[in-house]
Image (cartoon, rainbow, N blue to C red; front, side, top):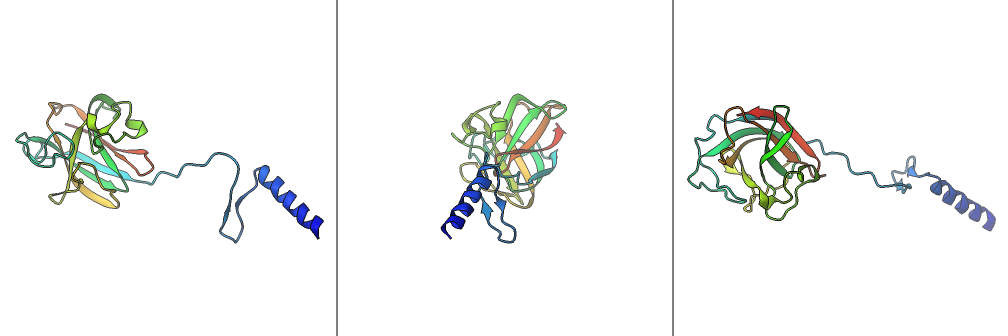
Length: 193
């Protein structure tokens, strides 16, 4: 009996060392496998519509810094955004006609010393280095008091406001981007101002 148990243990160890493992049929349990862990799949958020709002530069909803969610006397650029979450942050960037960020301007809901997601770090490193975005739904702010976003799930139609920096000129291209919980980025269609 002892030799059967020893042989079974040895065979199991060899099978696992050779890349065995995975799901045990009918048991629903996972047995560890060798190799690096696989990152979780993207969560499937979508930015389905993005456009300049008719009231752009005719309305004052926010100030220019993180958490400045009250009017400051300067007319704001306004856009409409439809998204289907989950997302944890949104970004507005200037782009070329194809939608590649040009590095000239960025606004976002990443605040203070929060780090940018990897795909956005080429432009700036932390949220405090950018202008803020006011995200409103049905006239009410969605942002937290510091300007960041709560985790947004499901489908939403937002009005998005950014302080006028002079970037909002005819022919300039813009794109919204959103960070998913796994820190990957999804992108909207390009809008031309």
